[in-house]
Length: 228
Ligand code: 9D3
Image (cartoon, rainbow, N blue to C red; front, side):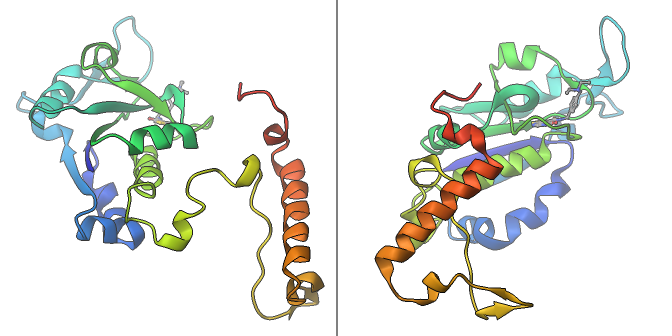
């Protein structure tokens, strides 16, 4: 799978693309990730990528020309172009699955107050948000999309983990609590049933504990309505 990232801060991507699972997937050729500096496609001598907002107001807006030029420089081919934007459709695992089935993604990272709307309209680009909180730009969201999507590319994640890749936990519950040695740490005991070797009882305990954690942390997952 090919993923091109367009940004005015290419340095942000250096270590995340080098380290860990993502680094290995890129080194092994499973993922072809390329980072491009939008500023390289500015045409004026000051290499400007932003300008004042029509209609006034505080904050600058990213100009459309360098972004169009950066996308067009990628060459022909079937691309799904995404603008990371706080005004986008919220990312969830269903959307991640959809994106992972594409051969070629282009992720455009906005900065400043936003990006000229003709990027959305004319490229065209679909807007995706990673959640309802305010960040300073689309770079970290692009890394979130990249990491979530790459885990679903065959071969990126090992066989054992890939068994649980499909759903967001069984029946849409949060994961059960996990423990490792020692059996007692600072007075806190590992639940005895987990030490018992009684697999049916362990399964029952885990399901109950997952249900309680979901009720406490994410009661919205237990209602049978779709997400708002
Ligand atoms: C005053 C209105 N703000 C929108 C909520 C302005 C604004 C805030 C943050 C404009 C741009 C940004 C930068 N954020 C992103 O580019 C971004 C983002 C985010 O802030 N939260 C969640 N997902 C994303 S994806 C891109």
